[in-house]
Length: 354
Image (cartoon, rainbow, N blue to C red; front, side):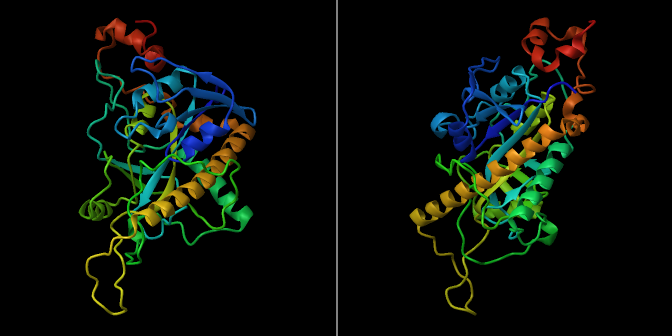
């Protein structure tokens, strides 16, 4: 395949850290959908061109609904990015997905409702999306995550990440921190954590936000089979598919969502209404978890890029690279020429000879 170029989209925590660490060429890209959230920094990791974009912009001013998802993905495509590894803070809907763990999701449930979810407003383009995350990138991330744990001797307890093996706990913990956390200044040199697990699968529920879930909603998400709750993976993953860019997500677990009630104060007593935790202490705990998870995530992504540098041919099998081949249902001859040219980086190859 042609030269591999990796796009890194950093979410809460990780985006700020990567943006502050990386130096290189700053690209101010204009797109038909406006400007992306921030300038895109082009740098190099182990000989692989890497393009870093902070999803929420400088100072984390863009809430999840306001993120310019179409402009972000279009700008990366315009710069020649061939694969995307994204990150995002999430709340856990399962006991075994612990704060500070990493999850490489394999499925998603989209509950967003206020975001443009396609580039193609003047054509019927139906991409296949049964498997929303690239299986090749996911395999690389999972294997490198397990290698990182083995190197440090920090393998966690289990790697289920699924509803079938979940257990309900009443241990007191914090509320949902799936998105919108304050911008962090995490460790500039990611360290190997004391204990964490890279989970090889999980179903991500994408909610609109910016408010977090009610407890009833959180319990419903668990009944649906959701394992994680977040606010930013959609429509980002779907737009990457439309742009024919293989996409994988490293989910950073910051806390348990609000489904997890506090334990009764006295052993054997009937659980009553949960006592709200101290808000300041809760926020401090969530920020510490996000900082640690961000360190873990950066270390994992660097290992994955190092592996890609050694064996770029692994990415030849990414199925999203021709996602539009059978997806354009409109009569191509009737699609307005100005639209074809406007979106040329996405689909021009399918209009040659017309």
